[in-house]
Length: 146
Image (cartoon, rainbow, N blue to C red; front, top):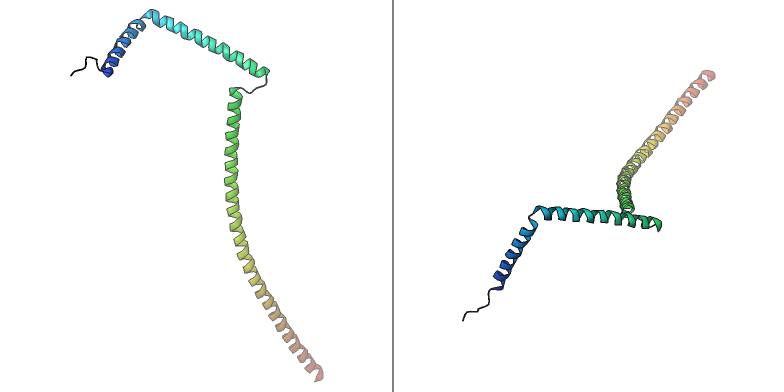
């Protein structure tokens, strides 16, 4: 049993083709193009007038305009970039500070060792000088005793 109703897909495709032909016939002429161009120009003029009216009302009520919000967003992005740069700089400074701190600890340890060595040497020099002075005194005593 065959159905007498046409296939819906082919029906709509044929309908679409017919409408496209009619649209192309009516739109494919110089009169339509000029009329459509004038309609677009009128619409754009109307849009420009509406934008001016809206901007005036926004100014009167002290409400920020699209440009103001865009500038604010741009400034916010700039501030975020500056903050990111500052965070990076602080991070690098912190790493340098830790490195310098560890080097200072090493230097402090080394200087303490040198101080101990110098103190030992000073004590040793004093002891040697005292011994030499004792020896000189004993020689002087012998000279006077003789």
